[in-house]
Length: 187
Image (cartoon, rainbow, N blue to C red; front, side, top):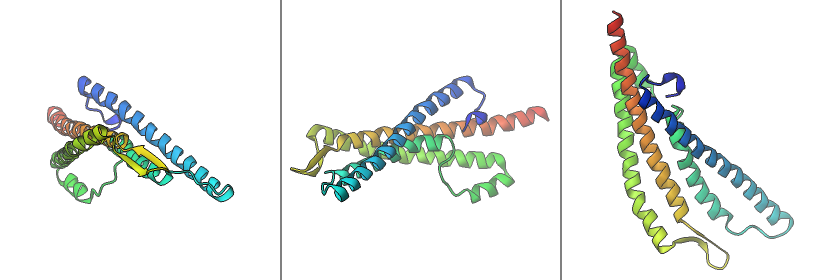
């Protein structure tokens, strides 16, 4: 829900805006990581082609960063309503009953809360294990990097996505029933 679609409830709107700013900052970090990957790959190609020396660990770094980038940016994408989805059925329902469409949309977002909650629950022990054991990726003698930072980003990004789904669901429900109530009052 972009700024123009806020609910009119001060507390909810303030929480929504604050969380939007937090996820926007996460998204900026993800964008910086994309730029870093581009520079790293370019430097690796130049080193490999002109000097015969590639940068060790580029594939490992790129694979960890791509996963991190997705989870850094997805919550803000959802929060702003830009996550790709097929909404043909939703448009059909909305044309017949906007209130039912709002409820259905909120229910789908609540399903997202459940699914991302499962993801958070599943990644938490992986993060703890990788942190506790100092698990590494790479090849001994060439390049080793800890995997826990990537798991941490996935954990934080999943929690942010879960929260974004919840905020969207609540915002949709508020907008759905506030609109209906406002229409009934105007009649």
